[in-house]
Length: 109
Image (cartoon, rainbow, N blue to C red; front, side, top):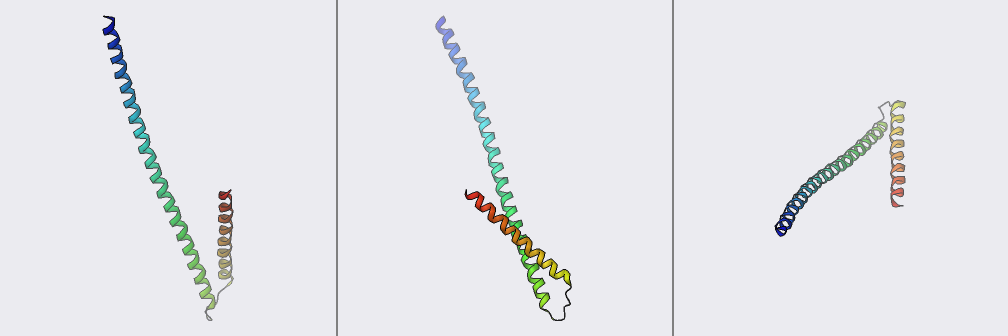
């Protein structure tokens, strides 16, 4: 009779451990899904930020080219605002280049 109790207990423990293993498996699966979703969101955000930065540089380049072209037109009477805006744009571009250079150097350490 004791033999039956031992087999019964082992069977019960096996069922419980199987259920626990199943719960952990489902939990890990859910975590993996969340990690994949987070990676996809991070990748999309990186792509968005990269495209936004490219768009900003394209706009700045166009603005500089336009300002320089207008300044070359003999009949276009540019006031000081155009020259000041062009200088600010160039300063901002240079400041960003310095920032990126420092960031690159720090990441290499």
